[in-house]
Amino acid sequence: MYEIGLEAEFEARHYLVGDFGPETHLHKHHYRIRVMVAGEDLGADGTLYDIAKLPEWLRAILSALDDQTLNEVPGLQGMNPTVEHLSRYLHERFTEKLRADRGADRITDVKITVWESPTAFSTYRC
Image 1 (cartoon, rainbow, N blue to C red):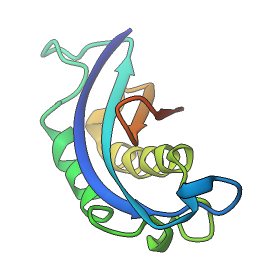
Image 2: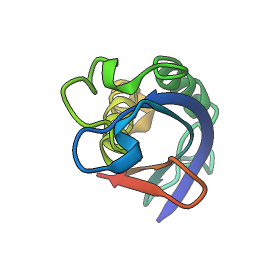
Image 3: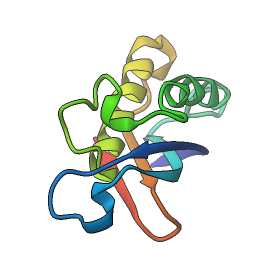
């Protein structure tokens, strides 16, 4: 299986509801995102997909989150904006873009990893 990917970063605030100690207070994270797309077959041009499209899509998705309070972002409202929920939210937005692109038919797997610190992360894959 072939995989291609990219990384990006953004900053946002959030607070968690429940028994999370200091995380229940509004605080900021510098998030790092990794997007990986995979498929079994390459096109006639020797590529899985036009990797140049991925950064534009990711920037568009992250611009709606950058410097925001995640608890107030549509699509994250009403849920604890944990790194797990954030990885799924980003996965859903990214796969919407892929489905709309007719050139993405060779992509069979999308994986989004979100780091909220250098050592804490979550991955959502589907």
